[in-house]
Length: 183
Image 1 (tube, rainbow, N blue to C red):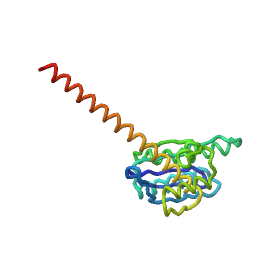
Image 2: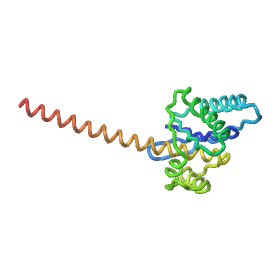
Image 3: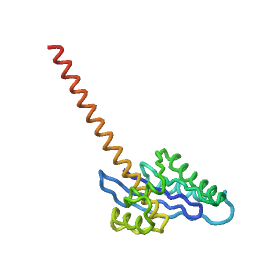
Image 4: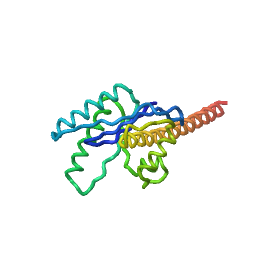
């Protein structure tokens, strides 16, 4: 299963694609989409077009986006929210389910500590994806988001398998009771 992680940003939107096979993760690609200029609408168009191209090229099966934190500058937060809207819209348009994670949840999933710094996160991403070369810090963050989502998907798959196993056991027990009642 391929997972794309997206670190939303208006000037620099990071993306990273990984593949998971069981519990094994491998790096597929990563990059940063840059938008420039003063006109917000045109910058959003660039983010939309280039992220659409990335998803078409790497055909992920799932997507994850980092949640926006609110800071003191309301205008900057609003602009970041618009970039985040693009980061949510594009995978949804491609038919992907999109997971959303708080920055601390990503750090905890990748490093084990919710308040890790960027160098610790990058170190652990390199550890989990040997040989990876980051396009930049935003791409490294996007890979961490993808890893976080992969861990959550793996946990969900294990839980579903356990539930199916229990359901199968319960069905067999019911069938055995029915056979005993008939005899």
